[in-house]
Image (cartoon, rainbow, N blue to C red; front, side):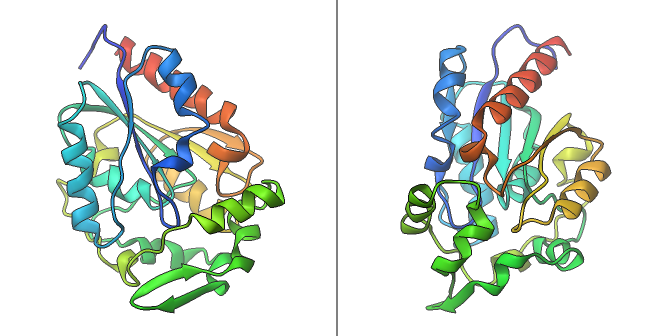
Amino acid sequence: MSTSLKPTIVFCHGIWADGSCFSKVIPALQADGHEVIAVQYGLDSYEEDVATVKRTLNRVGSPVILVGHSYGGATITAAGIDERVIGLVYIAAVAPDVGETVQDQLNKYPSDIFNHVEAADGRAWMLPSGTKFFAGDLSEEEQKLVWATHYAPVADLFNQQKLGADGIAWKSKPSWYVLATQDHTVHPDLQRWVSKRMNATVTEVESSHVPMLSQPDVVIDVIRKAAAAVQRR
């Protein structure tokens, strides 16, 4: 699908976050002339989160580039099969294949942060000690803000994927990947594995799990390159 239109950029957040985690990258893309929106899903179920992404697509123009951070990579993998989506950008993200859950992927390459999580009231809460493994290259002030605004997912969210053969967007859509080499949440080796499997165009950045907050210029640059590439296709 070739287009002369600037693609809409739709952001999908991970756990312990909401759409505001993209606040440092959205203004630059808006200034470039892109329509931009951040999906606000509830982390109550994978099915409902994906449905929320699809409802958000109905509220913006097409074509669309979906951008997913962390668990958001699982939501864009499913929602990205929509014909309006012409490209995918993964930021330190998981990306399940057929029959594979997010937990299956995390189990391959365990990371440090999950020793700093507490299950309570059916949700998985990040403890204050977890912020250094989640966003350790942010200032102490910003890390405290990340923790104060973090939103806990339902406890079994990572076991709810298991997509079918026709539900894997990265198998048919061009993909880009921002690989955070100092990540202690989604292990860098897991990021290398999934990005290689999807044959993504990879940009490595010496960053914690949140490069869109710690090194937003890198993320902006990758999205700009993705937008330029899909416009030429």
